[in-house]
Image (cartoon, rainbow, N blue to C red; front, side, top):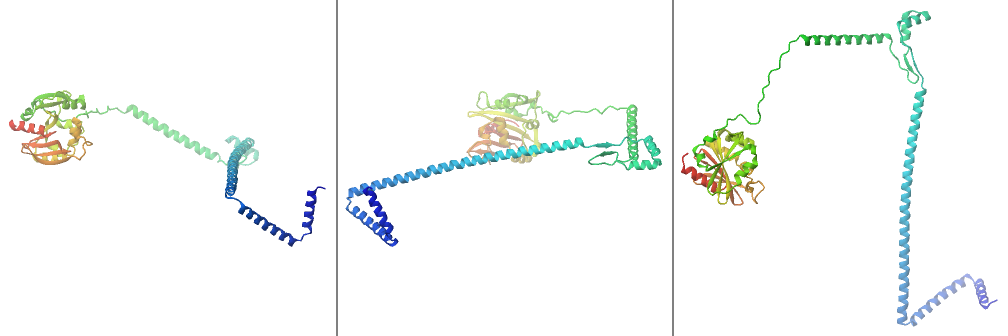
Length: 415
């Protein structure tokens, strides 16, 4: 037997004969001895060796921790994959179960429909033959009873008897009443149509009354003889530029803005419609202009739309004749909020646009050429002015230069 085996056997035999108390004592002493031996070894260990050992132990711990983390991550990834696969499997099972349930429901409905159809096909239906007076007499003779008893018995029997749900029907008396009712309705309808037909044949016809048509395009306002303009209009008309309303708003705007500029020249825009000069009210109505009723009552049909050329460019002006000064003054004050829109529609000048400028346009009162004048100012510039000359002639003009020239011409002539 080898020496190592003998030593091992001897040690096992000694431990077997050793008591439990002695075994615990020996184990404790061995642990204390190992601890002291390790402490002694560490005490005798140099600093370099200790640093190397600690580095090795730290590296081992880091490797073990990294391996543990990697193992845990792999386990979590596998668990997530297993969970996703399980969810997909359960969803597939749910879809399969729903499809199977739907298929079973369809089969059940088809089976029920087939059973209903077969039941209806196999349901017997019995129908009594049509009753007549001859059949009732034959039944009474064969039964040995009277005709009235036979009619009463047959009336109590159903005539249409389906096996599942028998239905009762009335006797021949009901059919007789229904037949008489239909016959009476037919007679009434025949008499009605008969009388209507003869009334149509013998009633004299009268022609319908003649209808008169009116032309809604232009109101019945007599055209003013603008070719016979008054003296004040002649003073403001160096040249005439004819423009027809049928040419459209663009032609009028071109006449007021385009063409060569002749300083201090005043051009009259002669507006015509259908070959005749147009009056004030139809012209403003064609522009869909909002103007006060007080002006409508006091303004004359004659008016002058003109263009004055100053060195900075053309300016549009409008001359209107008023019958009553106070009404004209009140109407102009009410018209101030719509005047810029009218002139912007005529000329297209940006200064009169509601969206132009950096400030709000404001009307103010003042004196221009010794006349009470209202001025619309925007961004420090006068863009529109109006005044009443000699309490009869309303002047509305763009810019101070145009208004001053018009007033000077009127003051130097005869009105």
